[in-house]
Length: 416
Image 1 (cartoon, rainbow, N blue to C red):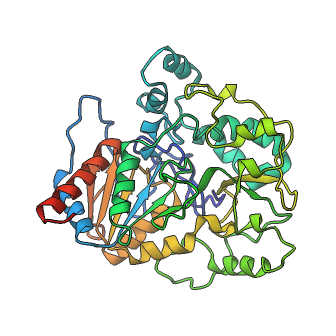
Image 2 (spheres, rainbow, N blue to C red):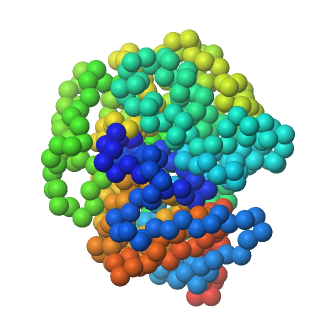
């Protein structure tokens, strides 16, 4: 996240943003009811799709996208939190009654627990409640233990609790596996559901906002702000600051500096913390059931520390006052390269309310790159500068349809 508020606005979006942390430079807030736009008429919010409406809109577009993938065009998928709602991951920016679907998915049915949760607002998005005031390094430094116990553990620390990849995640994994050289995915989610093996080196996936369950060492002081000049200011896609990345790498040649400040990530089992409390910071706590309310999560007695330098450790999640250059995990330089070189751009379950999607759409307009939008509520309007096709419906239904279409085309063409 980044506390650069010059682009603050709110867009209500696809099954909305579960663990799509609005991180990185130029993030927006939910203080305005107007959609984030660079062209006045390019976003429109549709009436929410009712449960009766299951017919897939955009089947012709789905066929065209599938053929682009099969023929080897360079495709970048940008996934957002709407992808994870069907897995039971809590939304970020949502206030509609129907967006309690994350809790229904977690409980398995619309039962008394869902009704009770609705009364106390558990189905509401997290964005308006706590994110803007708490998800910063500044807030963390003021009282790390309180930050963990009152913000991270109850709101985000259980992001992987009892959740499993849904059909949408599995469809994307299948596509990336079939076309590892031409298809790439940049996910804004920190829930870790997009990777079968979170410890594997996935050459087709960038978790650009971090991953819950991993941690980094907090340095004694931070680098300069994102407002400073950068190398190659005019490069086609500009997400982060390469100059600051280069400066950090130079500093880390000093063997006395902790590698977990910038280069590497810590697992919960590596933290200096009482053994009984480490499970509270793991992405999947085996001691808690999937329907356990957030309030049942136990608290820490001490702040976790890095095993190398003994500094306080913080979650590997990009906060509002951090830049992409702050840790190598975010891999923003590779993300810039993927977007620069792509021939087709695909959005999956995002509300277009963060800097990543803004930069990607600007690049698509400038280079006339075809855009496909898998969404439930937000559509992009085609203009003279934006060639876009909307494929409407829940991501866990539309993405498997894409994978099936790809398989059918390959079978028809005699491909394996």
